[in-house]
Length: 254
Image (tube, rainbow, N blue to C red):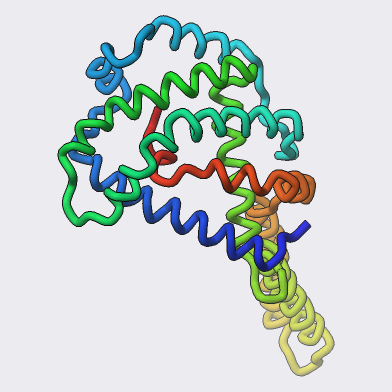
């Protein structure tokens, strides 16, 4: 199910904003980037009970998850995913949103903001652990849902032509047309008595290569396909999905 033009524009704006703010945040915080292990060590005093955080993660990761072979997201899992996103949004992102947006407008890094990075990472880590444990969702499932939900929306909302055709569909149509043209050329060559057997064989070989290339190309473009069931589900929960897009915090590993 294709999204409306208004939805695509909104998605485009949201993801453009996420990317722009994210790049600035990485640039601003880059000088203080120690990695997850170092950040945890530096902020040990900030997390009241790190053992509880690790217990929450262990509880969350005890939930089994296997990537669906058809890539379709089930609504009950999406609802839980959004519940985790809401907790990160409400407990961490909203608290630091003003600072993040202010940093995006500055040309030079704010040392005060740099000093806060380890604490933000610790907050994100703790909030995520609590939320995942509460929703019965592993980190593996959460990460897959994040890539699938926002990735599918980006592909559908930003990779369409004016007539609504997706990039994958356009590529497949082009490959099919090329193979058909090669077949017609080969048929015309076979019917032409003026051409030598060697020349006709060259046309047949070219048609065969075109068919093989088209087949390989079609398989490759399947990675760009978005399951219609996902689009219908994401459209239903569109408001929440977009609301819990958190700008530069998306690019901070936690």
